[in-house]
Structures are given as C-alpha cells and as structure tokens.
Image (tube, rainbow over all chains, first blue to last red; front, side, top):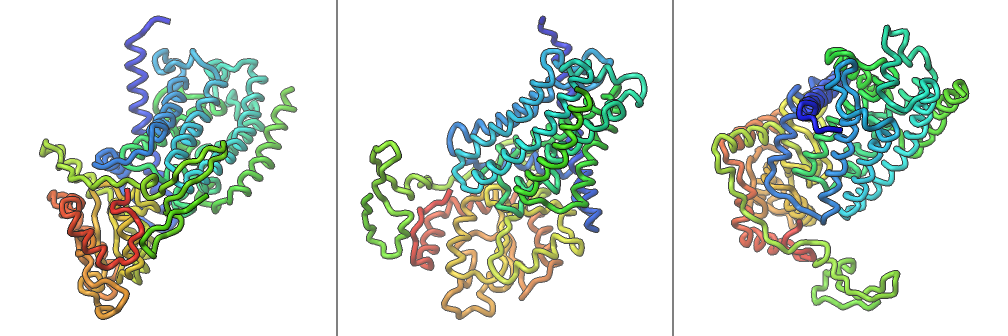
Length: 302
Length: 223
C-alpha cells in the first residue's frame, strides 16, 4: 500500500480525540460514582491535571530495560488496538488502518499490553507486582474465553473475520444490529466487557485498597503517565470494539461518543451496584454464566 | 551456604552478606544492602528554566496532590472523614495512593515513635521529587503531650523537611483542608522545594536521624 500522509494525519487526529474523550469519560464516570456515594467528586478536568503532574515529576528510578519497556508495550497494545479499529463507518479516512487487520489481530492486541506489563512489573522486583500480575493474567484469560466464543459466533453468522464487513452488515436501521440478530452472543460479549474494562466487581487486580495497586506498584512519574494515557485510549477503543461488533458501529462522531459512553456506562453501572469479587470468585463467575452464553451462541449458529 | 557476621548486633539476618548456591549449581555472593538498594546520594533538581512553564507545572502539581496512605499516629483517624462525603477532599484534587512511588504528599499524622520514624524515612525517600510533607498535630511541632516520652521524637523537621504544620490536638478535618490550601499556595508561589532542601542538607538530616535510630540496618539512601 502507498504511504498516504492524509490518512496518517486523520489517524493521529483520531488518536487525539480518543485520548481526550477517554480522559473526559473517566472523569464523568468517577463523578457519577461519587454522586452515588453522596460526594461531589473530582473536578471534571482532574485527569488532565494528574497526567501533566505525573509527566512533570522530576525524579525517576529505573529497575532495568524491561521496566522501561513495560509501559511502552502497554501503550503499544492500546494504540495498536486503535490503529486497526474502524472509528466512523462510511468515512474512508476515519477507518484508520483497519483494512490491514482482522478480529484475530485485535484480540491479540488486547492481550499484548498485559503481557508487556507482566514482564515490566516483574523486573520491578516488588512482590506485590508479581502477585498482581498473576491475578490479572488469570482473570483476563477467563475473560477472553466467553469473548472469543461470542466473536466466533459472529464470525459464523456473518461469514467473515473482517470487522469492517461485520459493521457494514449491520447498517440500515437498528433492527439490523447484532444485538437483535444474535442476542446470545451479545450477552456473552457484554459480560466479558465488564471484566475487560475492569470496573468494580472485577477490579481486584488494580484496586488501590487491595495489595497495593497490583502490577503498577513500582511505576511512578513518567511511567505512570504513560500507563494513564494508555488507560484513557484503551477504554474508548474497547468500547468502540463492542460498538462495532454488537451495536451497529457509528456513522459520525456524535454517534460514536454517544454509543461508547453508554457501553462504558454499562460497566460503571454494574460497578457501583455490585461489590468487588475476590479473584477466585471472578474466575469462577466468568467460567460459569458468560461461558454458558458463549457456548449457546456457538451452538445456535452452528 | 555460609553467612558472614556483621559487627552491628542489630543486623537483620535477611540483609546479611552471604554466599548462595543457585539452581544451576553455581555459587555466588549475595549482598542485599548493595544489590537491592542504591547508594547514590539524592540530587538537587533545578526548576524548569522557562518561568511560564514552571508556573504551569507548579499549578498542575498543586491541583493534583496524591497523599500516601500511611497513618503514623492517632491523627490518621482524621483522614477517612476527609475523603468521605462529609468533607470530600476529592473536590480539591486530593486523592490517596497506596504506594510511596506514586504519592506526592506525606501526612505525618500525630506523634512519631522511633520505630515508625525509620519507616517514615524509607517511605519519604522513595517518593518521587517534588514531594511535600504536612505535619499534623502538636506532637510533630514540639512533642505535644508526649514531649517527655522515651520513645517519640519531639521536632519533626529535624528529621525530614516539613512544608506546612497544623497545630492542635487533634486538628479537625477542616484544619487539614486549610493546610492543603496553604500547601497549594506555597507550591504555586514556587516555594514547594523542600525535597531539594533535603537533598542539599542531606548530611545534617542523616546525622539527626542516626542519633535517634540506634538499629540503623538499612542503606543511607532508600531509593
């Protein structure tokens, strides 16, 4: 393929929009959580301040090369997921580079960052990091199982693994969304999304009041800034993936923002209602209810 | 495995220098104090040379204060109401962090036992620069009601530099919020440079710390 400067420019602009929307969305959701707890909550621009502050801290301590590469791998996973994700359907330029990869590549990028963090925080040498990362990987493995089954069900239904084709097949009215044409796979997917966005019932891995903060225990200043940047991008892109798979994609930025907001809100809504699971409870839960829906979705479309 | 005895009778056996046989049969020497800790001295970090940039960064630092979740004395009971609906410090950009690596503010909440002082020094030195200290209660100023105790220190700023003192026994969460606002003013004026002061007067602080802590079995600087 030829190098296209215009496409690159639009992709970078899209990354900027997604980053800022992710930061704004996280502050809105934290404010909603605070209102449920009868607090006023953080100011809406707090995530930007935290980001600037963390990048501006003066001293840094490294534990070795892999410690540096951990956050780099993590943001590589987040940005990689963004690059191969079609943002706006119908616009040639907002499709990013999605024609180069398919769903299997996207699923790989979801796991890629976790593995990078595992290596990086392992070199940090803190025992809490090692425990946190083993918990995180075991939980994420069980999240991937129902998610993969839902995606295989969709692949059988639409007879393709290309995300653009799946979205295009859902155009022409909300009754064409996968949500209506394949509700069982949608249920399995939305349950696994709860774990992928790691809000309350499934946030033991990175909760500050469990063994302190899990994998990023040793990460500080710029390292933590990179991880925060990635979290903002990843939350939007994960929501965009599910929007494309189950809710008909977006044809303009307004629709994109509305749909990603409500998909993210689903995990926050569940989060403020249900208390945190222990790790063996969440692993058992993912291997029970979402897995049953995932297997059903496959059987129905065999 | 043979162990070499250290002259210090308070030596922690986990930190002792020793020869270890690895899983592949090779023998090597482990010296945890040297291997796991850095013996580099702290550095004085100059502020950004462009005044406008430094002012902007100071504004961000002042409005995003992450507090280390480490309660040293009875004053730590004032922290939960500070963060919960009654006083809700999140409104002012104050959030708590569980690890010293990610914190900027250390609240010394009340009396400081000698045993705790050791942990306070280690945690303080692990925090990234610039870092700030709030000293809560009379005990940190002159010893308060524990002024003649055999086991508590009287003046905190002989051991670590303090940005803002809050007098009282105990100061209420309102006083703590006022202290946070004072700290914000100081940082925005560019006066929140106590971490550099600690680095510049490192020998004086270490001398004071070692006078109090008799079982000094850690390196001089705890990265």
